[in-house]
Length: 567
Image (tube, rainbow, N blue to C red; front, side, top):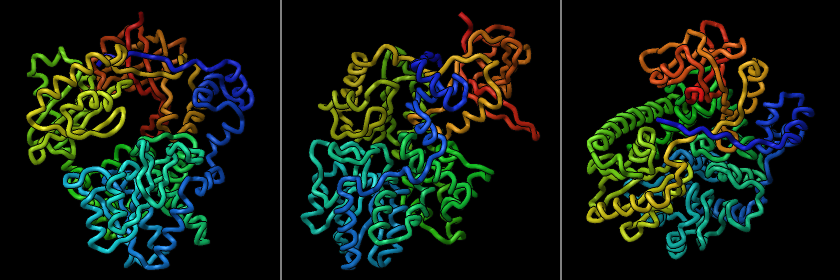
């Protein structure tokens, strides 16, 4: 796939020089900090040394006092409380975090949790779930990672004698539900200073407020801070501000004293000396997610609230089995879809990918849509059939709002929801061809020209002699990486192959780059096709930096993102 290279904004040189002076760092490090909005010593200290004292008071969140008082009343009056959450990682970690906290201050017989069935109920609050709560005499539902837009369903619950507390981080609609309290910093009139918490992060703030209300040890809510870290990494939310503090604390706990469920899952995943964000995103998160995709997401909650290690190992084994099945289905459907596109002679002319498989598994079509974009960089919708209705998962490319594009085809859409880069929808089978044609037309007219090719956004241009161990050690302190603080990517121009570049395992590219007498090795995974651009030639490259450890030796390695011949 051919990439466009685009440099991030050039920071103000005066601000860069100021940060370089007050921190005694290089201009390159200072520029990276200014790009991230860090322009003073105090801001740099807060960035490099996240401190629990910088977490905001939970009672600043609109509705928190009402939420705590209603929960207190339910506990004292022995009302039944249902902890309700979505079936993805953020939802299941949220449920586990709040349930584990409340079971220590409420009678366990009056407390339970509920995860909706992905196929029977769909995302978020469901009528089936409310009816189940009514049948089982629950009078308070605490909804996590969902509920902000469930206006009609929460009113239905109210009419049936069930109160709702909503703990959510999704954008509110024009009308808010009739809940006892809505804990969501994204409400326009919510004074809470930080707006980008995960759903589990909202649950954590709720626990903090409850701990203060009940005069509990303020450290109590941090018992499950590792689950909050898992939610932040998996839900791809902002990694600055309060989330950065929670992530740092959560990673520390994950490595030093993980909850029993995560400990069991880590042991069944891979044993490492130090787990980081990538281990969550590519290891723990998909395993927790797999239950909701393949079977029942309650399996994930059971693991995350378990306190007996031997029982947790059984649940971890089950999640691994679900994940293996998910990977098999994902791979099988992706290959089938790619073959269908390859055999479609008109596909090359289209700006969008819309594809349908009657028996494709609903739980993985979103992953398949992402996989297709890796090969064919186009806004993509993958459909399957469920009970006579076509259900689709949509994924977008950078700078294209796929949610709006689906909305522009509303005459053929029964239902849809989501956000700019990912959405879900359903259409009648008889409307599929009309929808696909209309969606293609919308994309043809609205897809920005620059969005036809994927982009690599690099932070700075750098020369190889500017890279050394001190530079990378300081970069390591920029972690954890994520939205708002992405892994720094550099561009280096006019490098020369030292003569030792080669292809590894027929797929990967080992680059040996030389510039002004300084040589670094680099690895380009899946980039063997670029060998001829490098071998005995001058070239430009975009890369990040990492440590390479082998046989007891540790050295700096370029992690190649792309390579182009010099102009």
